[in-house]
Length: 197
Image 1 (cartoon, helix red, strand yellow):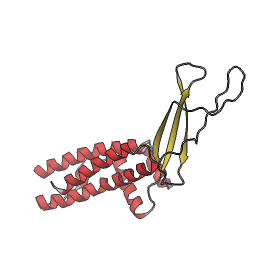
Image 2 (cartoon, helix red, strand yellow; image 1 turned 135 degrees about the vertical axis):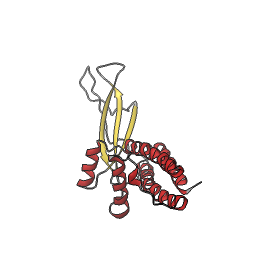
Image 3 (tube, helix red, strand yellow; image 1 turned 90 degrees about the vertical axis):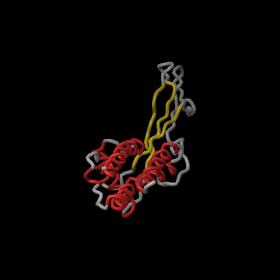
Image 4 (cartoon, one colour; image 1 turned 120 degrees about the vertical axis):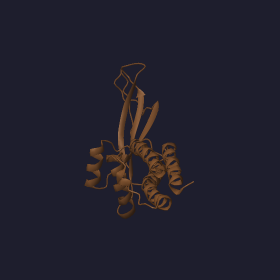
């Protein structure tokens, strides 16, 4: 197995780990940081492999599949290593029975910025819904949601980061990683095609 295949296998594992880490902001941040780092290590390994096997220089820029997301990952990796560590926020969605529409759920949501990037699990209780008794108008105790979802978001640390993410159209870590991974799968196939040529 050549080094670039090993790094790509690590990248696949990091992508899977990012999905399984969803219950822990700390684990999501760590898995995402690892994934970001491996996206760039892949090209470094390809350079070495291509030079060793073909005695030629590898040119990542010849691959035409790069996009705004992969450019953001390259930028983010440099920021993470040389400037500011990756930080995340958590968007919480609670689903409660709709008081006026039996059988339907209503969504209550909000985003919390993590001061502590080492939280083992979402804190919960940040959003509280106090239903009102429709007969008496009396406020009832806090309702327990039927379901809770968490979205993990890149926390922009600069105006440059905000602009890049705005241009992409999402800050959702899992969406960004899925988009980048799809391109990197194609890049890996392209590398092997060039290696065999």
